[in-house]
Every structure is written in structure tokens, then in C-alpha cells.
Image 1 (tube, one colour):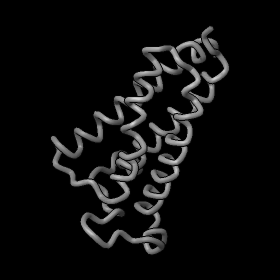
Image 2 (cartoon, rainbow, N blue to C red):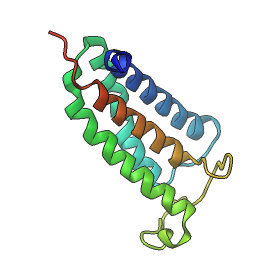
Image 3 (cartoon, helix red, strand yellow):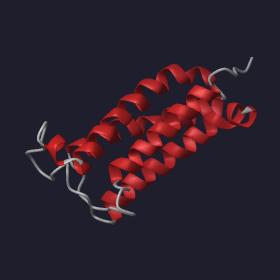
Length: 139
């Protein structure tokens, strides 16, 4: 646990960088057009890479109160998006009517890993790492 408290900030930054890199890979290299909910998830993830990078450089653990609203809200959007993909009835609640359908699945690895699932995993990891590393502040 001490190791996570010590390096949690850096690990959260690494997770955010992998998530941003993955989203850019899927859209710019693989050619997957992001749907409306994917864009919302990007809005919450991309600033985390910058905020966590600056906080890691400065070893500023007070960033937790700024990061958690982004990661928790982004995680909730990812969870809804994932449910929309996997449960047909949820897709009827708020269907994407313009552009790429939000219930479409560009990837479906092992029958359950989709792009929103990957984003949800990143948001949860960042939230947990931030929560666990919040107690240790540098003087």
C-alpha cells in the first residue's frame, strides 16, 4: 500500500497517457469514428493527462480534489456507454441519433471488452489511484 501511495500519482498519469494514446490510435490510425459519447469521454480524459502530468512533475498530491470529479464523471459516462452497447433496452433511453451510433462496437474482445469498457477501466484506475495516494502530501 505504501508503494501505491508513493507512486499513485505517477501511475495515474501513466494510465491517462495510455488512455489518450489508445483513443488517438483508434480514431486516427484504426479509422474508427468516435460517437457522441466517445467524445464526452475524451473531454473528461484528455485534461487528466495534462493535469496529472503537471502534478507528477511538481509532486503535487493536492491535485486529487481536481482529478476525481473528472475521473468519476468520465467513468459514469463510460459505464452508461458500455451498458448502452451491451443491454439493448438501455440504447432506447437516449439513442445517438446523429452520426455514429453509440451502441456500435468497433471492437469486442473476449465478448465484453469494448472501447467504453477500456475507458471505464482507465477512469476507475485513475480514481482508485488518486484516492489511495491522497493521504501523502509533500512538505
